[in-house]
Amino acid sequence: MNDYKRKTEEAERKVIRLQMDANFFFERAVRSLDRYRYDKALNYFQKAVEYEPENPVNHCNLAGILSEMGKYDASNEALQHIIAQVDPLLSECHFYMANNYANMEQFAEAERELLIYMEKEPNGAFIAEANEMIEVVQRERARSGAPSLALPEMNAEVQQEPREQGRQLLEEGDVQAACDLLQQALADDPDDDAARNNLVVALHHLGKLEQAAFEVEEVLRRDPHNLHGLCNQALILQQMGQHSLLLQQISTLRRIHPMHGEHLLKLAITLAMLGQHDAAYPHFTRLVKQYREGEQLEIYHYAAVAACYVGKYDQGEQWWRRILRLDAQAEVPAFYIAHLEELRQGQLQPSYSYALPHTAEESARSVERASEHIGSIDSEVQLLHILRHGTEQQKLQALHAYKMEGSYELHRILREYVASAQASTALKQAAERLLRQWVSTHSLVDDRLIDDLESARASLPIWEERWQQVLEMFLLHSPMRQQGDFRHDVEALWLEFIKRSYPELPRLQHPEGWAAALEYLVARLFRQPLTYAEVAERYGSTISSVSRYARRISRLCHVQSKMQRSLAKSNQGS
Image (cartoon, rainbow, N blue to C red; front, side, top):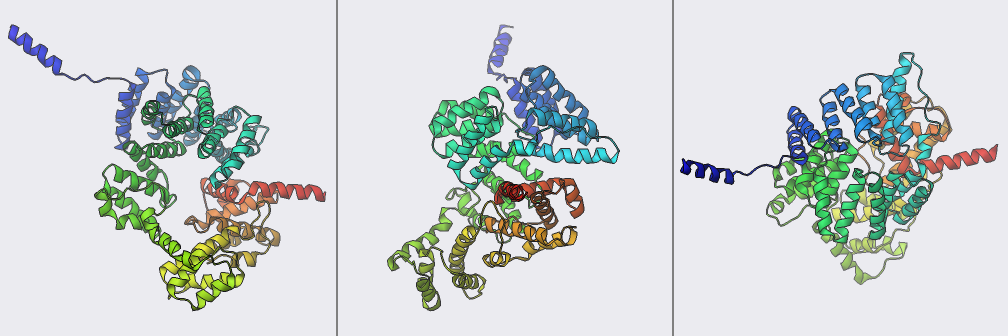
């Protein structure tokens, strides 16, 4: 008996007991989601709520999985519990409930929740989506003859204008100007966490780490669960070398499982930048499934890179080949596919940046170094002489040494090089570099539209059929096509978008959506009433697509400043 008791005690000492806490069940839930086992994920999220009932993130995860399973009533019960019992300040719950009500076609309730969210969070993370959704909801209510609820007195777009301008400048790389504008916005509204998060990013880029750390702490003091704040803080801790605090922050980030695409992308990129590739990879794969094919090619690249870092090279190759199926000229996936063996052997580390890595640019830099012996090419006549009479190497050296300030004659010759079947690839690339420099700086003013359309079109190195299709869609569907001024401004805005985007234009797979976005924006310049819903229906597109394309054009082409100039001009005339 004693021997039996001793063996039993020894066996018990060898048993490793699992720590059954909320984190344990959260990780199991995430694993189940990655395998599309929603029933198991639901059970694990429910367990996480039981272990940490005071944590609103657990309740939000539970509501999210219920919504994905189509259990909208149960999802709304979980969201209402958060507001009533757990965290009354978590206004995003109203936006989530509006989505659920819309899916159940309970449009009055959806509109009510959207208005509550827009009133409480006029600068919230989902304000753009809320503005889009409310148009759809109000349209559905109008069909049934139901009166629409009143919108908030202040237009949401006007409210968010200072923050949006700062964010736009930040995206365009004008970091100092963005920083100044965001600080001004926060002086007007110190509670604008979205503006403060953008300010943190700007300060981080400027190297002002201590100030950035202070601002992000201010965000998290008011909202400890602010995902953008948590991600920004982790990157700042990494930059400042505070390793112990960084490890705690990484542990927190790895336990978060966002449902919304914007939050999911922010978290995935942050984890990738922190070297947490195993945690970033499932988020990127979920993002791939959320976007329509071809909508965001960079997402496929992110997923491919993360796959390589976790040893899934075959999967990475599949993502890169998918990019090539959608864009046969894409250089980045072609480069990595050509160097797969180096990746497998660890001789090449993939980069999340959707650009050619260092090794692919060495040849171009070697040409730049070789050109130094011929001196600076600062004369257009000198460059034209070399292009017409020089050797291949002399032409390359001259093109790499010249700064584009030439005439239309030089521009025409460079365009011929790009289109020539005889010119080498290296020569074409060098000519394209100068053309891009010309296109990005030639006759574009932020607060007014292009006047000379013919010159603007001629300044582009090429004019592609897919760009023309967008204008043809406008001429086919718009009732404003007969108005010369309106038609001119549509073409002018489209040319400006192409010039500012070139050569990194989107694939434009849905020309009807882009044409609808152009008409919507120009209608606003003309101060004509037009909604996303109306223009989307006319072109056979979707509201979400039109609004997304319109925001992209507006941000890049400074449509807001053009509207202000147009209004000021109108007031002067009156």
